[in-house]
Every structure is written in C-alpha cells, then in structure tokens.
Image (tube, rainbow, N blue to C red):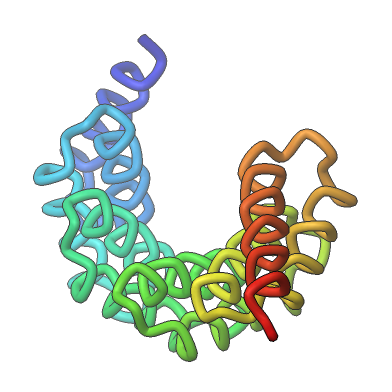
Length: 178
C-alpha cells in the first residue's frame, strides 16, 4: 500500500516537473522494491541524463542492473556514483560485491576495504569483506572480519554462517598440511 502511494506521489511530482531529478530517483527506487526493474531503470536513466553527476541515480542504477544480473552495467554505475561521491561507502560496498561475483577478487577487496574504512561499524561490510577474502583463500583474515561483524551485530546470520564455513575450511587446510 505505502509503496503504491509513494509511486503515485512521485508520478504526480513528475507530471508537474518532468525534470525533477530527485523524483525520478525516488520513483525508480520504489519501482525496484515493487519488482518493476525495467520501469525503475527508465526513471533512473532519466535522472542520470538530467544530472550526470547524480551519485544517487548511478547508485540506484547499479542496484537495478544487479537485480537483473547485468553485473558489468551494475559495476559501471557504482563506479559513476563513486566518481561523483568518492566517500560513498554503500557504493564501494556494492561495487565490491559485484566485482566479487565477477571473480575480480583483488578489485573487490580494495572497494570493500574502502567501504569498511568509511563505515567502520557496519557488520554487513565486514561480512562482505570476509566473504571476498575467503573466496581469495585468505582464511585467517576472513575469519577475523567475520568475527568483527559478529562483535558489531551478534545476530548477523550471514557472518555466523560464513565464520563456521571458514573455520571448517581452515581446519581442513591445517589437517591437509604435512
């Protein structure tokens, strides 16, 4: 109910002023939540056309393309958001996740470290960095990040699961050594 109402409000604002960047971005975000990614992308692209330096437009385009599995396009828009706002922690975090999914672990870890520097109290970022490090085979450091995520948020299920897996992998690796 509330999302449909919000969408109508943003559409009404755009009927009055079709160049209202913030309304395009907000409508795009609402449409994404409603599962209307194509229409969301149309509005977010309009916002980016109207204001090419809009970090919010590019960040949300990154999310929308990620939902559609278009990782290269998603990464491109997260990079654009970071160019506009270098300290945009969420954009660094999301770019890191996309790069990790693409197997570009060194680049992913660089962006996740930057996100962690910008948001040191984020359990999600610590967990994401730990996951990338684990995929890279750096289990000791990954374990430390999973533990830090759990210190920040004791009920973080992803960090708990990832820690358990990393500890088992580290134990197996230790047993396999001569």
